[in-house]
Length: 184
Image 1 (cartoon, rainbow, N blue to C red):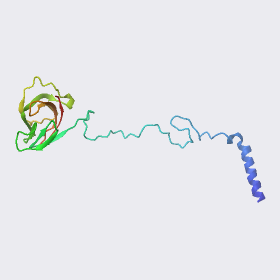
Image 2: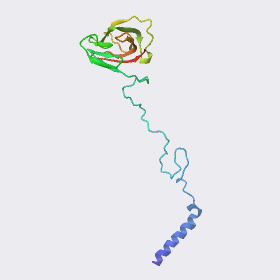
Image 3: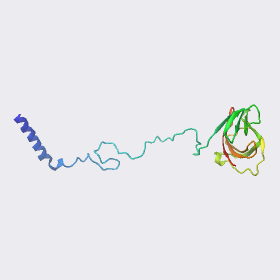
């Protein structure tokens, strides 16, 4: 036992003598303040930059337009009519329901009580569809045979009192897809 204590004491003494001031000074690799490393003991892993991991691909819900605008779209099946004021549709066997009626054909045709003002050109968003209807000539039927994708129009409600700007997203049978906003 005495020999074991003597060896331990000698080792402790040698360590203090051999290490000297080195015991109090941290190892050069233990603490770093290099860019990208933490000030804690060096684990070999770069410190958190504060930026969340990014896959590089933005999430796409498929609902909003890719241009960054979010517009509510509505679907209307062939044979159904839509009332703008309530944003609701219902089945119809008559051409006199609601404000707009979807008709079958090569593509969806539209019918209304002399309520359409057909606008020239195409529109990438509802906000791009004009809202001035002063120079409009109104008709009650819109032929969809050539497709109406991104087509703009102003719709006068069945009572002839309120006006809505409309952007047709798609009119492929059996469903009309569109967005709209009240003008007055």
